[in-house]
Amino acid sequence: MNADEHVETEDDAADLHDEGAIPALPEDRSLLILDDDKPFLHRLARAMESRGFLVTQCESVADGLAALENTPPAFAIIDMRLGDGNGLDVIQKLKEARPDARGIILTGYGNIATAVTAVKMGAFDYLAKPADADEIYHALMATTIDKPDAQENPMSADRVRWEHIQRVFESCDRNVSETARRLNMHRRTLQRILAKRAPR
Image (cartoon, rainbow, N blue to C red; front, side, top):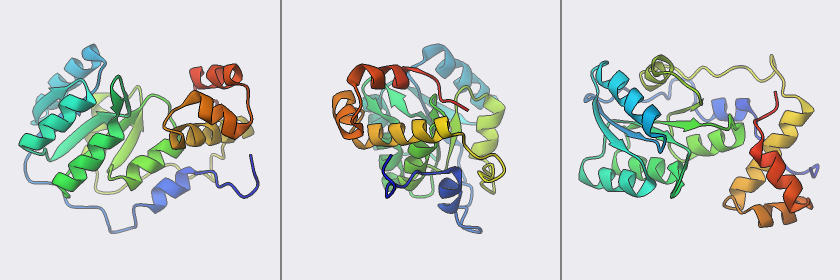
């Protein structure tokens, strides 16, 4: 890692939500859930309906964007990585169509760097999978954003390296060959790292 390259931390994500800048809860309970894991999608939809939400289920970025064209929802739960693209595209369009909407990004990678990107692009918050319905509900309805203090739980050297690799990977539009070139790393080595879970 070059000395002049900045590695995002959880503090960076927290700083994006200034104290007192949490938007008010939208009045209606329309909710878009976008996830290509069908069992999870259906389970979460039932759980959120039982909590009073009017749920629209989508399994692809294309379907999610189409749903926004009709009536932009007040709330959204969007998976980061989908078969036909990135959930961040849907978050961005949602915020353009309905600035007061609250969108939660779910990421199975526990990746702080991409979570920071999500918040910058309009996500209200982010949660690492597996997240249950209670966690997601509380994140959607939160009046404050309360992420862990990175100084109390500093990242290991392996985690910092992993975060940096993920950040470069995202900046290369998840192109493995280009990421490997920028990092001066063998492509197979990079593929092995990307296939593993985040180190603690």
